[in-house]
Length: 323
Image (cartoon, rainbow, N blue to C red):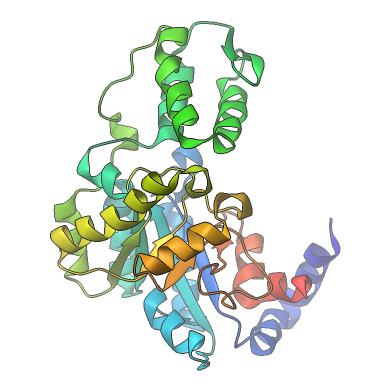
């Protein structure tokens, strides 16, 4: 047990969470979710857990859409006790499970969608790798740069190795590696994702947008690693989503969320390209002491099934520990 966890367990019964909230009132909490479903399948947050988290945010904090938080804060005007809920990718279960809870509680949300995924042009490449490995009958697979990767007895371990390796490859090499996997594994890869990995539709996004509590930002077009793109590829992944969002939803927000979103996945060159592409903010997938100091490196807390982890981030203990 680390010291931060020990402090949490000691102070929570004594009202310490409210004290931490008071001490960190000017620190914006931005949470990153991906998937919500009834049973937590595929690493998702369960509906029950998500509902409790949303209720807690609504009861004790000031929930805002991301653009409403960022514009005043970049201008030096703080919003006390601000919390933003964000979702990445654009899976179908956002519409089926997450959004009904948010709508019932009237809590705003910002979703970042990969427009090529919504268009049905691609399905997300980590899901492609998982689909193939789960159905493979081979014990191992040779991967250039990794050697023989064991698939049995747990294909998930192979998925982590191959996906992590892909994050380090230039875009074209990653695409080639994935294109070669079906042949190596003797598994057919369908053009469209299976039902468990299917995307939202534009009609669903329009319907949710009409409620007034949803804003939609860009998560690229094909969900590549932005730092591994060449100039032409980078320009396409920045400009095409804006065009698709404007066409389908009638508006665009100046918000871009880096796919994967770790420090190695965006560079000064990528940030500059976003500025030139008309974006005002870039959102990452890790927390930090200075959450909004850099408009193109807006920090977020990953969502958690754990009540303790969620409350530590929400009430400010995680941020106080960083300091």
